[in-house]
Image (cartoon, rainbow, N blue to C red; front, side, top):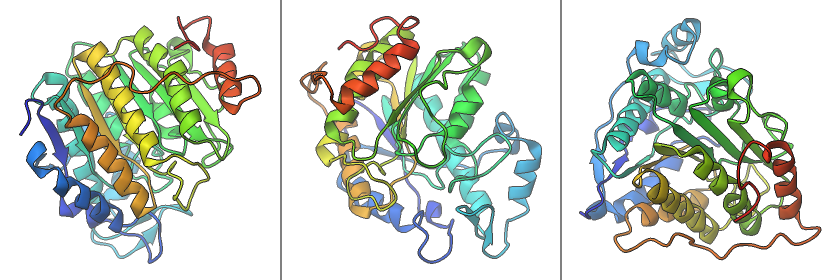
Length: 353
């Protein structure tokens, strides 16, 4: 065990939630993650997950949604929408994912752990307050964030969603909250159709939502470049107490559901950059929560990149990758310019690195 206590949530019960044969959000995803976790067994602390209580879930979700999902317990395979299914154990599996994230977030914010990785399913970032959708039943990250806020102290939480799909549920739940900065990089246009540049938050939360829609074919250069020029300066201006990564691995070049080109090296640089940012701003406090990722090789590579980063024992560089130039006419420059046009007057340093 290293001096940095890295807590990891992993449990066979997360494989009990099932869709029909051939569904991409399948238990084998966690088997692939588990193979990598085993490699790091001597550098992490495995933590026993727990079931979330109804009142914890109700901080985010409508009572009717909770009741509807509870009623599926023990039922045979059923369908919620075109993409989202439940099986006999899905309700309890979803509660287990939520409870795990609540405890992990609390442990990292409270200093009982330096950082964490939650290998949970079903994923959560598409789940709206009143609707399960997009493979997601409950919004794990949103509920766990609300649990931190309910404890007092008004923690400032940065949620960076690097899943290839826009986290519509997380955005909508926090879009009026000044104490939560939600940043998303995602393929656009793409499912679920939200996350354009002009979606910046509402009411008192304006400019606490930063969307970075990216065209199909974007790869390491574009993802690392927007991380350096948008995510990092926005995070520094916000000054969070905790950084949460909605950690999908479906922007990987091998993913069957998307058209992005991130490599293992790209994920490594992204994870290192966010860890270095956490070291700078909030005593290293960072949690990665599994969202999507449907290539088993992509999930393995992404998980390995994250765990290598958080379990590193040596000095960590403040700038893990040379700054990528904004070349005239490049995809990266186009993306950065659009975000700066929308948010530049409100966020100091946006667009520079």
